[in-house]
Image (cartoon, rainbow, N blue to C red; front, side, top):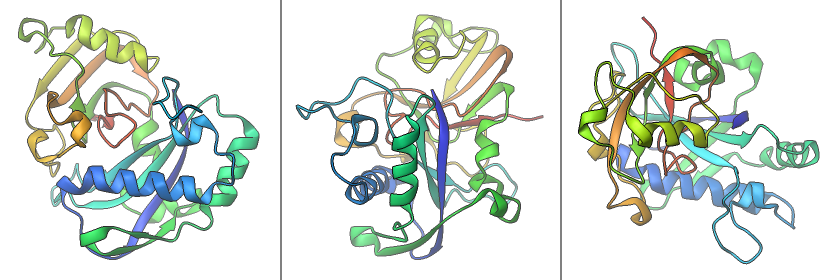
Length: 245
């Protein structure tokens, strides 16, 4: 579903806690929309002409936390703006030009972030969690960095070692163009060291009463990332990475 990505690194400003994820994604989305010249297409705004939420793939924003290594503490190092794979070339070019002007974010009570967009040439010199390839390399097994927000509660009898997650996980994967997993596990803790517990990632009010859980999913063959899954995939939740080793 998603193939085009723009990654921004925090170069100065406050360290953001996990509960700031919803605020960060809202602020980033607004900044992108403000920079994009009118008329802003549905694939960028995420809303249809009548103001209703788009039901088509559109721009997603995810925090990029420091996880997956011995000293990881989960702080948010930056963020990624992901675009659908079928994005029109004209829209992509316009967005590229617009994002040149994105060099800071005002984060309310948290203060101001100074940010920079990372080029492909810079990837080798930044933390793994800021590299697009960290989230896109093909692999059999994926685990959540930010918890998945579920629209429906999975049946406990269908998730766990050797179980495929049932219809709920099949639908989650189908929505983002992935095959049905052959194993699906979920719980309060991420497989990646440093990521806060699922309960500590506070979503927007829209998702406040929905199940949030970290997941590990395994497929019969390698699948290409990025894997952004669940009801909150456009607003920072359900970001996964290959689980190596």
